[in-house]
Image (tube, rainbow, N blue to C red; front, top):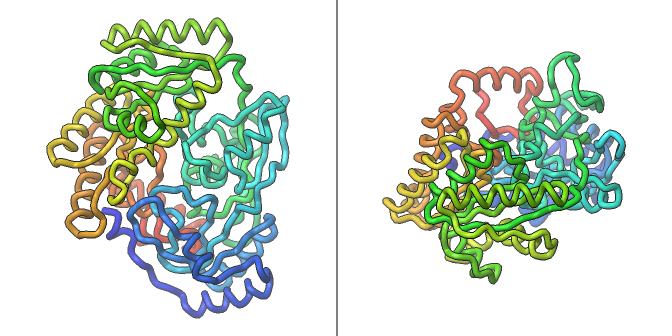
Length: 470
């Protein structure tokens, strides 16, 4: 699976050396080639080994990006964009060497159009920084993948997260981007209008491209009004299937739930220990509703009735901000809580997504697989849109341990594809899921290769990701 696809490509040694010389002269201290800088820009939050770039540019403007791309294009040197490094499938690795462009200094909010509910930001702005900036406007950006990821990274991986069931994913919330293409020119994919029939939808082409078609320099986003009232709570169920049935019924009845997250019993045990909680160690739904006082109360009552009908316990909910914050902090800390169960082991976080009617089947079969093979793995999911994650703890020091982990991920993806699902709902392909993309889309991947060749003929933009060039 992943390790065979994370192979080192052909390095253009002469071109890299020449580009480094030019970039050092142009950018001075903002271009670094030290080992520590390079290592920081190739770390991965998975077991895929880090593959370091040869230099790191701390870009401060779109002009910096254009200049760097022109240099790299002239010398046929790879470029890897770097936001916060929170990607999960090796997207920031540099298998062919080259230059990493760090966007942490391009973190300005360029424009907020409160009347139109949109804003334009530089790619290095993180979602938390953006929402802090927007707080006094009465607006917020709803996409919440858990990590405090950069907007550029979230756009490039087509991120989603806990609010996606109500507010959609990044593809639904990006109105336009500006991007530097292979000739070093900056293009704009769309205007701020909420809809358009003007030509190809290039915005959607760049959203989810994982930096393989160009380098983003700004992103225009949809915003939402901060709800008058937010209510949230938890409900335990006797089985995962019962919890999934409650999710399916909630969605099918059209109850506008904002978040509905599923944690299995082992994940609840980990969260209790790590976040000092006292939830029942059973499959549990974390639920949140947005609206007015009346609608939040009504929706909470409707969900409580559904939960009861599906065998769930009491739905304990609150509109107290501090209590809700504690609940969602525990959800967002699920990764670290899981790792704390066996800190000596490596962690592999993977995700799939299936039609919601197949969610219970897919999770049930996955749990049976975990039990049959004696694995230590937790399930947590954005259940409202059929997306769930498995965090597998395993021994990455031995070939056998890695083979066990990769075999499990292969079975998980085959299971999701057999149910007409996808090999990744939000992590992206990167290096880790190339083989599954071929299984999922077959010959369509060849069309993707043709698009890549047309826009990036010398394969300088994040090579070795999504698919290998033929």
